[in-house]
Image (cartoon, rainbow, N blue to C red; front, side, top):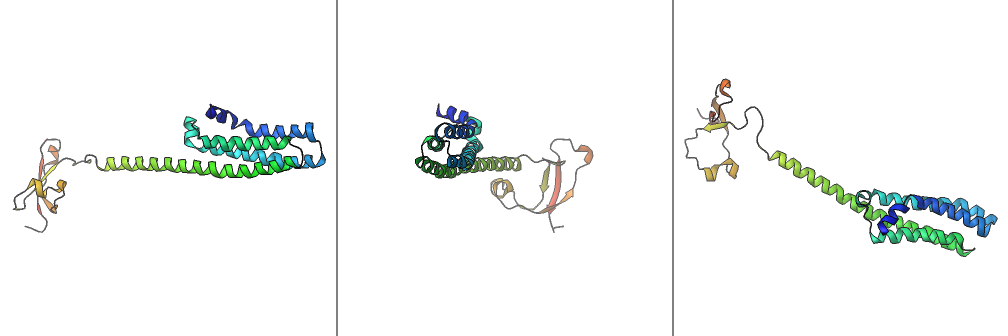
Length: 202
C-alpha cells in the first residue's frame, strides 16, 4: 500500500505543493509579504520533492520492482506534510514551519540519496562479479584453434608418471621442440600424434 502510494505521488507531489501554497495564500493570507515569499517557497518545495522522487526512481529496487523501505515513506511524506502545513498556518508560525520543512527536505535528500547510492554500488559490484565469472569460465574452457586437441609425444628418456609430472596436475612442464609434424592432409584423423624432444637435446 505504501509502495503504491509513493509510486503514485512521486510525479504529482511537487505540483501539488506548488498549487496548494498559491491557493493557501489566495484564500488565507493575501498579504504583500506572503506574496513575495511565494517566489521562494514554491520553487524550494517543488525542487526538493522533485529531487526526492528522482532519487527514489534511481534506486534499482524501486525502478524495477517498486520496492520501498519504510524509511523512504517517513522521509518523503514527512517533508511533503511539512510543506503543506506550513502553507496554511498564519505568520509567523507558517514561515517557521516552512523553514523546518526545508531543513527536513535537505536531511531527507541526504538519507534517501545515501540508500540509493549504496544499492547502486551493490548492483554494480554484483554485475562485475558475474562478468569476472563469465570470463573465467571462458578462459577455463576447451582449447581452440587449428591444432586444438592434438597429441604431442615428447621423448625425454625418463619414465612418465601421470600422477606426478602431468602438467595438468600441477607438475613441471617440459619445454620441447617438434621433431616430426604429421601430414596436413591427415589433420582430420583421430588420434594424430606429433613427435618432439626436449629443447637443446640432439
